[in-house]
Image (cartoon, rainbow, N blue to C red; front, side, top):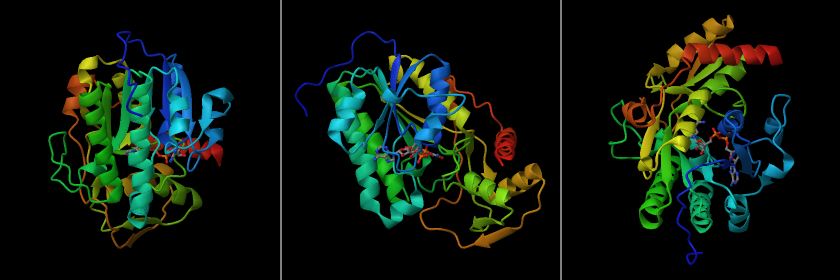
Length: 324
Ligand SMILES: NC(=O)c1ccc[n+]([C@@H]2O[C@H](COP(=O)([O-])OP(=O)(O)OC[C@H]3O[C@@H](n4cnc5c(N)ncnc54)[C@H](O)[C@@H]3O)[C@@H](O)[C@H]2O)c1
């Protein structure tokens, strides 16, 4: 697959976008966001955790022809998916830290081989921009706030696989001129996240069922929660940014540190139900304290998180109460 790589053309107008993992949590929100901005979208997803129905709702319907059901580990499928697109936003991944400890090889194959396939196909087809969904998990335990200058020390196979993907993105930019950007997302939350094992998705689910909120650890561990609309904003800023950001990495987060006890308290206040909290032992591979310094994303991309945690949780709960 190395012979016919094409360098991107001078035309920078990006109109047709491939979203891998477009049926998942962030993807479902992103597809709608980009559609509202006038982009034409194609989705590649193997539906392992994502749902086709997420893109076939009353408020939005992706044309069936624009959904390719296939696996990013399959080179033929990937080459077909990048045909005639201007930019790729690569979200498809094995996303569970805990499961990556049980099966590091599968995590590596999906995340790293899948990303390599996409980078290679994008080079072959002259795709102009490649935006990669990385994670704060690449950094591991660091004195917060974390920024792009910290030396990554992943704690989990998932974090290691994302770091390897960042390295591939850097290599494909420097070796082949593919305009790659890696975005290290903090903990995202928002609509269409019901299938996720992330803390806000779980707390909301348990709260809906009137079950206790389970905290792994002492509740003093911290995270940086970013609403998915702000993640979409960051991705869109990258799509429209000048080529000078090629090869760069950005922390994409709220920049606010919240501990899990505070989060549980906030949720209980919003839902107006007094569900109990249960503490269980801390899980392996999970970071103790984490929040990001987003100065670089603010300065270079003009990124400005808009949704406060309180507002985002309130909107999510309201959405659930309408559904229930
Ligand atoms: N949600 C977060 O808090 C968060 C934080 C940091 C980074 N990220 C990254 O953002 C991206 C999107 O995460 P998400 O939360 O939407 O996860 P998700 O599991 O909801 O979505 C992932 C999507 O990828 C698809 N997929 C998985 N394996 C595939 C494969 N082999 N081939 C094709 N499609 C495949 C799934 O079906 C799903 O639709 C991931 O790369 C994840 O690592 C997410």
